[in-house]
Length: 69
Image (cartoon, rainbow, N blue to C red; front, side, top):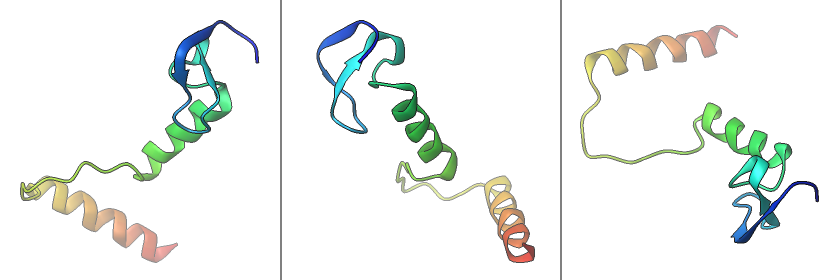
């Protein structure tokens, strides 16, 4: 492990000791894994609100793009 460890903090991805440089992660690899999860939409905040017209059209256009691929 390189960098300054953060006391009593574990990496949320792998559970190793977190380091200050990649706070709250232990390495660039774990930080990149987390970023990838955000970009893929793996993290979702559920709500009772209905989607706006703009959100519906964005979803429809992204689905049609996926079907073409």
